[in-house]
Length: 398
Image (tube, rainbow, N blue to C red):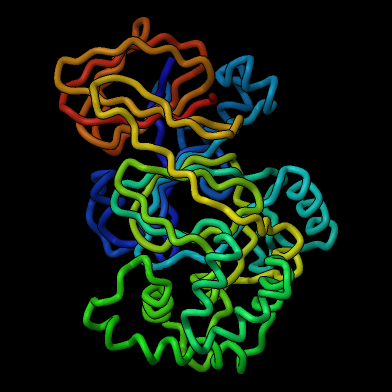
């Protein structure tokens, strides 16, 4: 069995006004659409339509837990284990990382015991789950992902006169101790390190002569996009010199595991993650930055980013590979008249990204077009026929 599913928008200030409404074919308005959520997270649960009745998806699953499938119930209980999102990143997101399952359970219990309201801006743990996540680029996409090698960081710092003192400091420290000192540096130090770099590169930035692989470009871009005043510099700006700057082409992706610092800088993407909203921030944000908690759980390993290759372009079904057991993402390409027979081994969420398809199972048939989504129950055998060329994504368990 399958049912129409309506997601919810999140109107965060870093989003755009056109991409998500156009994707979802929504009426034009002047709101910012940063994210579109499909799942059961209490912050923005999706609504399921069945026999003319609208259900909160979380309530529907609680009432009929068998729709998740035996494997899902065994591993994750009677909850949908993943959350599917579309993001439109117009301004950089905060540098952030996510906890392990154990860290989330401890942090959530601690903040509950301290009486911190779930909506309090100083709340870091909004649930007791971990949040591994994958993303697939829907456009050229730029992000920060994990620490570069120490040698690469030193080379970057030594190349800039005002950052040479930082390089000399790093020569004698571990990455973790060095990062801790940078994140807690006073404003006078941030100005001493960053202002000369900003001033030296302003003209080249204005004339579009700074390549996007150059961290100086992103320092100035973040200053402008986030309206960061020079007299109140954000320590997160230094992370452009410490972290990998990753460029993903449309269709490519990356996986963010627990503890890995990252930040989305520009572009649109699909995100699929464990069902959690736990975020520990590390700068480039006016929101709460919990330095002690950040330093406790950050993974300062030297990382070479592993890009997930784009899905097959031929007609048919393919799955992106990640280490996660909480979710998997499939890509289904179709053209008018093409056919595919599929089986939902666990509960699935299907979102049509382009074109139009017809789905049939037993005595059900629905036509689903761009921007529309379905919830497909576990153990459903279904038939897809393309009506207009395009593709759909399907969130599921591995």
